[in-house]
Image (spheres, rainbow, N blue to C red):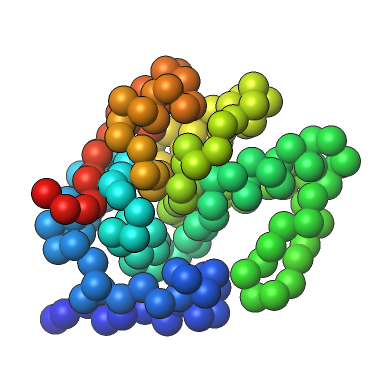
Length: 179
């Protein structure tokens, strides 16, 4: 039985809501599914812009009971705001917002059946942001985690540091783009 395209409109940002199974790189999809079946986490999906990395991640997340997908820079911004102000307004993707403490944001990440950090490495991270990212990645050890990026693995090490990169790159690496 072929997989049905999920209805993302209820709980994903508009660009992700357009994700379709038939638009994904088939080899990347097979590799990702295999990684999840064999529990090779995290899954690092990388390649040039506009090649379907976020689409692939969203489709995988759609199969989970409690999926969480967020742009890494947005998540880190929320954590830094909550750390500074005691809480941050977090987008619910349905047009609403909810105030959350740093602990609640981190718990939101940890409680997900699948967490996807989209576009890691698009901006330089401060030391506190690196610490928060490390805390998130560490909390997902042994749990499904997808990280998408435009960065080659060696460049990711430069952007997020060896400690974080070694954890992110310790599972399945999937390249999406022109061969």
